[in-house]
Length: 181
Ligand code: NAD
Image (tube, rainbow, N blue to C red; front, side, top):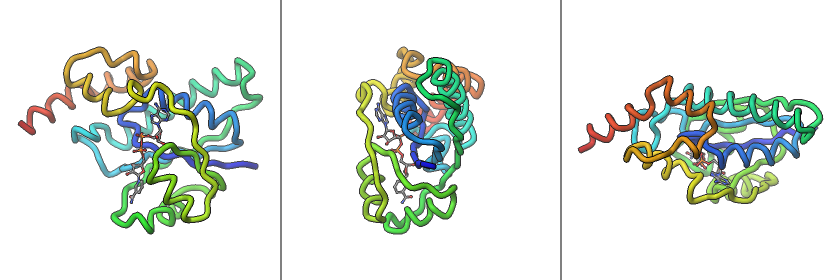
């Protein structure tokens, strides 16, 4: 039984994350998804709370698994655990912190160089996926578009648009930006 770990900040969860999740879910039996920097919210870089991001990721995974089972891409639904994880101020201890907070796993998926480095140093097998339209499917770019009133909805799944609208996410981001000026 192969249980994997994948961590993201998901600020917000976008179509790049969806493609990474799809390729991981093809290969594993169970997946632990860490919601990183869980302590952060209401800032320009991290506007959404851990709970809001859990909602985004859990809706995305539900839809994705339904689609993958229906299309025959996987035979049965995968078990997915979503765990919020606060940052700690010592990178050298971070992997132990993560391991103490989530179900056990034997392989890590990441395209983030620091995450890859820290897990490899701790002896884990780390796999990377290809990058999906990295310049468009990128949290920084999507938050910038939200702030500047540009089209951002095509870059995230429809269920994430719903969550962001439900919580007034774009208005929050704009108010925070005004408070900073
Ligand atoms: P993110 O949401 O930006 O990305 C999540 C993952 O998806 C990454 O592996 C990223 O490379 C990948 N990805 C994003 N867009 C993609 C695309 N278009 N195509 C393919 N892959 C794509 O989150 P992140 O910033 O990488 O999350 C890492 C988390 O780990 C952060 O919260 C960070 O604070 C935490 N962390 C904490 C410590 C510590 O506390 N000391 C140390 C290391 C990492």
